[in-house]
Length: 345
Image 1 (spheres, rainbow, N blue to C red):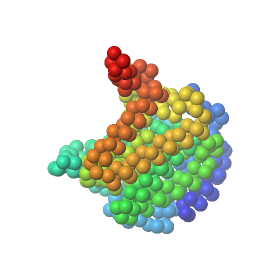
Image 2: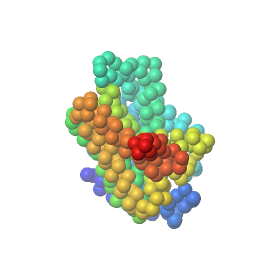
Image 3: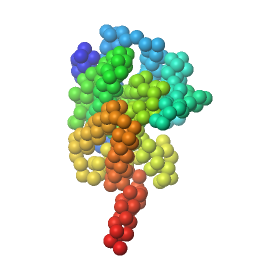
Image 4: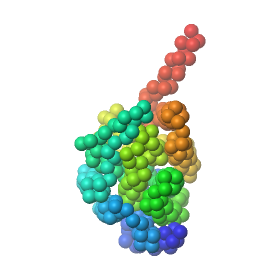
């Protein structure tokens, strides 16, 4: 709660100094806002988070490596917001931060238990798999940071779910870190929700993404393949939006790292939803993914497969109807139409 209060108090100061120092996010063809908005809001989340850490002092063998990795990612985001760094350099530093957690902290997903017995060992690929997860989720949160309050709200829903799952498993460290980060983000969201007075920038999006990536791994490493899907469900919106963007750019022969205006939030606005409606719709989608994750952890194997089928179907319908890949990519729609024609014959 102190983290929440700190965020509420510190944010107006950061808004004031961002304006004074001209650290603002200026409008362009990809961005929805029309006026320059103060950025560097991520500083608020980090300050509030550190206050919570100093008060509660959570202990874990992973604690120092996680904080050091998070500090590197925070500084990377801060310099990127000020100097607009290259994508290659950002990836390099993100891998460096993730490597601290993986090799110094020893956080690695070494195997998953298969549903019908036996284990899938990652072996030599265990560090690589863990590195790719951390860097992937770090960027996924950054990718969805395109509307007022979107990344902060989706992160808050994910953190609430991670904290809830950690309570069920009795993981005090994950509970503590997740709640500190959640209330720090909620305090900032008060000023970041539409119409935003401040943006979190890469400073906040990369920091949140890194912490959520690590927390989601801490709770679910070396477990069943079914329960390993839980963090994927919790982060369903940013993960699917990132993967769809990569597929879209590949199909449309664009560089994978090149920005475009065809993300989920862009398409919803292009289809006539207001800024606020779009954000609330994506919040709802994130909440549905989180409910699916909780049900997934409590159900049988066949129940898990049913949830997986329903969620996959909803995603495919969204992809096709919002034309998230392109206007021609509609395999399910075409299959239904074909089946309908054959039935009429």
